[in-house]
Length: 546
Picture (tube, rainbow, N blue to C red):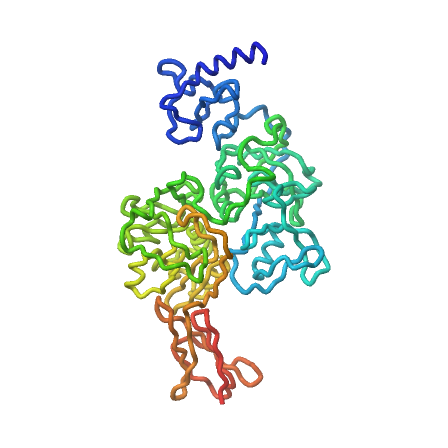
């Protein structure tokens, strides 16, 4: 150690006395003293960022905050130097790790590796999405990456990523890094180049450390490419679709100003973004930051800034006896934390929804509302315009009083009964399924839930190891066809939120459609050979007409 370093170290130690033994973890953050009345900023000068603090292990750094990114989790290091040459305006798009759990439908598409071994059977929607995004996460937790066209029964082929590439592979076997990797046209930006994006500088990224939740410094790396990336076009790797929605709502731009990285990005971008390895992709959705005892929603700006305190399940009293998990399914485990609606009051949890719209104290003072479901609900609203929420969360006791199903998803905070305002019921139904929702169709409204999305760990605790969620969506629902006095009926049971929609079809002997109708009963026209009915979008029944 040099004499200069030793002097700096002594000065640093003199300025790094701590009141009440508070530490750099952020808990009980206090004022750091360097003499009477001195603050952390006073002791550390411009190295003390807003919301940052000095630490009592400053000897490790040689001063109070020698490396803010190391000492102050989530703080962006001070800009060093200027960006390089201006490259102009680039189109900005996003890509992410798509999730099998976001898609419904039968698992009727096989994904293969390059040796034509079956990696998994997935819904068609997920097969289309992983082909587009390049990386996808199966419900069993494996992350698959695009390999290329192949001669297997379905193409392209894929391979499972390793621990050094938990978010997937880019070009040249580069590890994709959330909020740091961009896909480029190599004729415009060489692979491996660092770039500076003005609009990202100073913006807090969605998610949690180590892969998110940091203040961006504008520095990114050309780690990937794609067939649709042509010319001045950057495709920004945003980790998860929910993170894309949050970030896009904050930035609100389709083009960004790009520079070569220059001295500003000489270190490859400071802080955040996790790394090529060791930063495992989290389950989709999730309550984001805010600390262990808070739950964060998208909020008015979609940036995850609306956070509410949580109450431990042991404190909520009676009326919250959840049934045993349905068929042992981990997405039906009981909550361990709740939102106290009376204590929190009404807050904006998304751009167009408040907490009181999806949970009311009259249906249970303590509520479970999952942030990822609110993000999906807002996405529906963005697409369709105004929609009404007839029912959201129900406590177990309230669910019983209204005759709800024993395992109603309304008790798990990811189900909503929705009524269209400016579109048809059919349009709302289609949007529910296209956004990964599970549809039950009623005569007056749509029940849309996201039972296949992993439940929020802050509300439900960590999942024990076990089988992934795989449920028969019609479980507990039944219907049958009956003919009385020349009219067909389809009595149904288990539809606990009203009369299910019945969609009738009359077919002739050649299978041609003679008539279609909706209603509680149906009179088949002359020439009908078969009658079909779809009940609640769950049961399809048919009968031969003699």
